Image 1 (tube, rainbow, N blue to C red):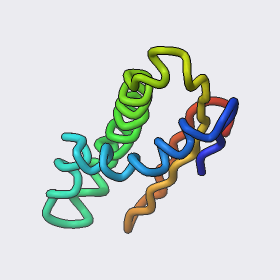
Image 2: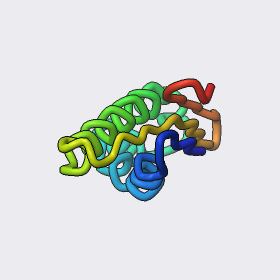
Image 3: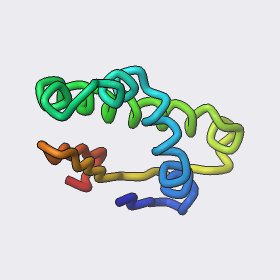
Image 4: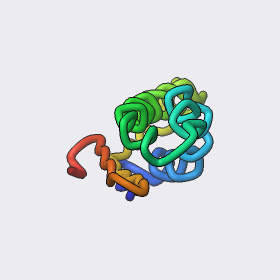
Length: 98
């Protein structure tokens, strides 16, 4: 769930790029490559780390765009993300969306 404010651009950017950035994250890749659900359950912290780093990377990417750097876009975005695994539900939030 993405809740944009001061314009839609940040929310649109986050929604369109979250999966790309998450699946490129090294912690996510390590988790995804674990051989079975038991190993994944023991290493659920990898998912948590991946979500935190994904939010940070999305923020960095968006803030480095020319529209933001030159003050054309002043939008922002709060978000809630949940990943459901066979053994856990991992939720992360940014901003006041919690």
